[in-house]
Length: 101
Image 1 (cartoon, rainbow, N blue to C red):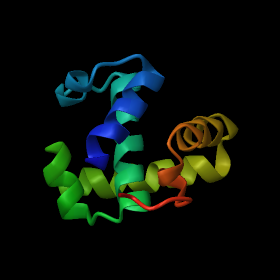
Image 2 (tube, rainbow, N blue to C red):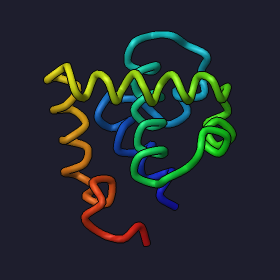
Image 3 (cartoon, helix red, strand yellow):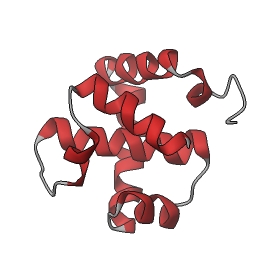
Image 4 (tube, rainbow, N blue to C red):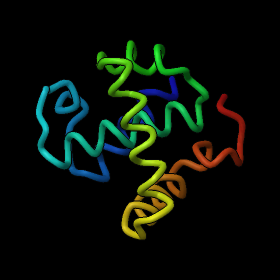
């Protein structure tokens, strides 16, 4: 239930459709959307690398790389931090303020 909501919020932020995430595209908006979704699935939902990879149909090593990349960018890049905090503001569950139910 929470996975589709995360996908919806991130896709809306990048003006994409959830089906666009299934493309094997490396275009920046699509790749960054996938990476942010992976970040939220691991950080907020608590999924492990294998579960994230299976959910998004990506390789496990990509899931690990994407999480680390967004985590690093959140600490060092103000634009990425603002974007992620904006998504968290829209859906406070991702920040851990309410239960995931």
